Length: 226
Image 1 (cartoon, rainbow, N blue to C red):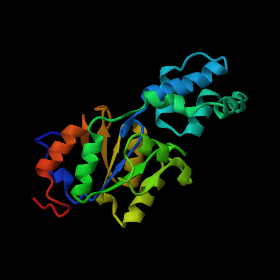
Image 2 (cartoon, rainbow, N blue to C red):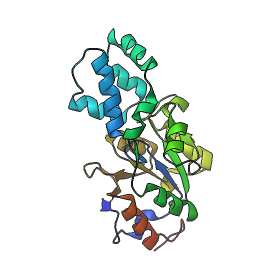
Image 3 (tube, rainbow, N blue to C red):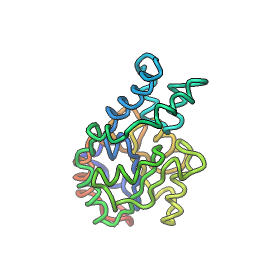
Image 4 (cartoon, one colour):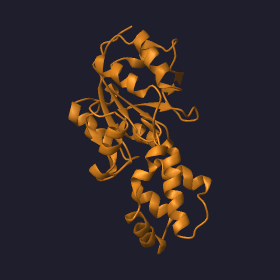
């Protein structure tokens, strides 16, 4: 385990060609928006506020699974009726682009890295990337709606590797949850944890400014041998 800072060992970057990003909690801070959204569903159903376990679940899983989790059984169909009439634009004030991430992406692209997204979001990624001024950085953008089995299944990462003709040792996945950790492990790629030191990861990132500075200092290209 290592922290992204000026003392980071260059060997941690050996052979790296592609970095895959999770969306929520990594590219964007959507926690408050998610809590308001899923809390609204429970309130409309006459249910108590989100519990801590529900908060964690809905912030890391697919939309469909999250709705099923907080509104199981006969409540599920009622929950989807609530969602049908919900105006998602009301959540925009509660979405934030992660500090320093756009600058990090510019540097990565300039250094020749391939960039991709693997997220549990279903059909909102194009809108999110446009609203957060992150369009044009990523290919492919894999959502839960584009795979047969979403995270933590490795299908999404496998599709990214196939698109770029890469092997697992050439890829790092930046995520912020145990779901992302399991996804990276299942795909056989490096896992870099963002914001949660309790996760098991090769590199821990406290801020995108720090990882950018660290990589600028020690990255020598995919052929690094020292």
